[in-house]
Length: 250
Ligand code: PGA
Image 1 (cartoon, rainbow, N blue to C red):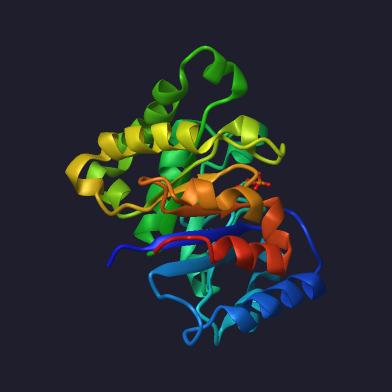
Image 2: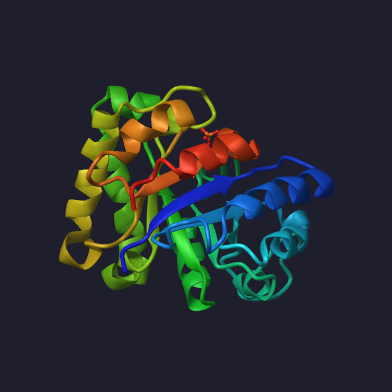
């Protein structure tokens, strides 16, 4: 069945107490009795809060994801977390290629592709993040940049495997800035991604991210190739995040 996804990326925010409080508030609202099973909610807490958050959402319909995953399976990689460890913690998804990590941790498309493969091999569903900078948009390179980022993963993982994942289009200039792509701008890129994946990607969830909030989500989610949202700042507020989630058309 085709799934739409609503993703809350908590980034590096919160204490164990605030993380569990937020997770508990979401879990009270988002359970099998109340929600459409065609829309899956996933929260991405900081690693140190993961097991506490997993316990808080255990009886709900909410899944857990990891904000990052190592490209290695085990070994002397101080500070890293393997895909297998994440599965062991109850994770179902992993973000790969988030623009903050591409920019600040120097993650190249090749490293992102390795992380994608490591996550998928361990049984995680990768959410591959792609997007252009403001300069690249102004230079009319948006589709070229995004399709290149996806092509690097297709080359390493294979098209069929990329199509079993989810892809999040997040223009770098819209992430954490309060600026959002217009629904038309987002749809244009989403339809290019859909075309790039071809027949195999007909039911690959394509998410939009970048300053999504309840006030702009309905128009974005109404676009034919937008199948959900990757929400940062607005996912730290339970009511706001639930309001966004309820705007997704399954
Ligand atoms: P934002 O973050 O909603 O705060 O722009 C989105 C993201 O980083 O995934």
